[in-house]
Length: 61
Image 1 (cartoon, one colour):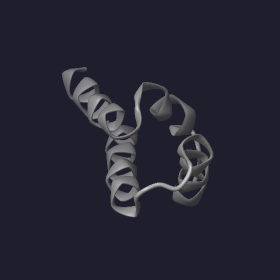
Image 2 (image 1 turned 45 degrees about the horizontal axis):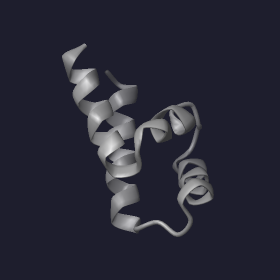
Image 3 (image 1 turned 90 degrees about the horizontal axis):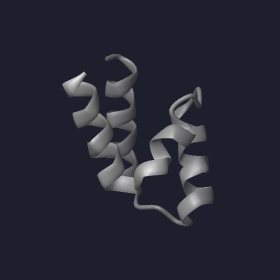
Image 4 (image 1 turned 135 degrees about the vertical axis):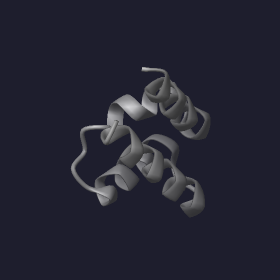
């Protein structure tokens, strides 16, 4: 459980608290990028890549 909380906190640091819950169930990285762009406008590609890595980690915990 502690590992999950750590990973979720990392995601929140990048795009805020609601973001992880809005994109977690999206099936593709492209859909995650589209949703983040809808929420935040133009997004930094490096930041999105880190965020997707965190999402992938969370999905396997």
